[in-house]
Length: 224
Length: 224
DNA sequence: ACAAAAGTGTTGAGAGTACACCCATGC
DNA sequence: GCATGGGTGTACTCTCAACACTTTTGT
Image (cartoon, rainbow over all chains, first blue to last red; front, side):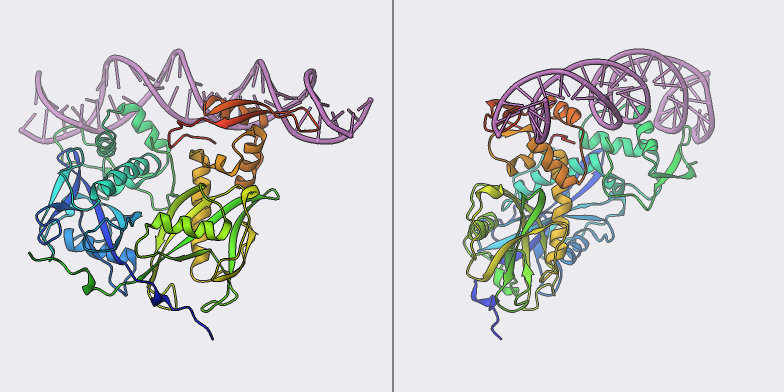
């Protein structure tokens, strides 16, 4: 039987790049790596790498994420695919960008094989980046804000048990504005997505009620 | 200077697949093609094809769209990239899926070189599809509904000048429920996204006011 | 005059927003 | 007892949802 030959077309290279967000020092930060090799040697870039021929896109993203941060089982979402023919000077490289949200307490940054260092940068002061990574980062910030407004992804930046004030702080950082405490609590509680987990005693003020996120939350809820 | 060799990794093939939506016979329809060659010979599939080595992803999607429908300048949006290693029996093929919205009045379907026929199918009764195209289609329907709720993309299914009842009908078809005419009009008008274009005279009942969509609409607005 | 779709307002319920004080704990 | 964040209620506004009749045209 006749069969189409998939090898008659020249093939592009395919990479994944990951925008890894965390909250650290009351700021939304992004992980960037300094490239050790050309092109863009010594320039900053998003962590990423080539997709192996036998691994899925998500598996590639998870592998890179683990190589860079040591973490597994964090929030990971495909962002967008970027494929302008000239985006990489080495040749045709299509990249599938991902967003990851990690709790910075769990992270041990370690340099991967093709980078000399990985460091957190404030999302408000992004230095010049290699390739089209500025465009990817800009888009990821838009998507992140959108996701924060309409879903519960923000909770993946927190430990499993948390106080409501911790969530509020994250929203204030990401949206760069203050929310009224009474209204915020009212809204979050009314969504019925939290489970009480008892009272945290290790604080030098009135101890807050801790909550965890219920398991069976639907995908899209209006948070803000 | 040392330079990373992008060719040391085996390269996957990369395709684009397009979910082309239209409204026709008071129904949301999707364009499917019957495959002429293996694998999945004679099975239905989404229109698509290989990305050329020197064209962008969007250019590839536009090219395929034009090959299948003859239309250009329609709403086109990247949906998601699918890259499970075994999704194509011929080898490793990553596909970037797109959504297109076309006004069916403008369409002349024509069979492209690798398909024997392209036909509209009701989005409610999708036959078995080749590859993982069912998954792609399911996801595209989710995205479509979301986009209809929060953006003005639905207007790209209409001619440039339209009556409000035409928009309402589209929303009723896509969400499969009736909306109250008074509330619908009130909502759309209050969004301040329409421009009056005079009255349509060629109808055998009270002629409706025609509108066009204002040019400078922001991206996300709550419609429903 | 009849058929067909266009156009149009009011009311009640619920959600969002603005706003300030007392409480529990560690030191 | 003081510093620190935790916890809580009310009133107003605005948006959403429910609901039916008259108007304009072609035939």
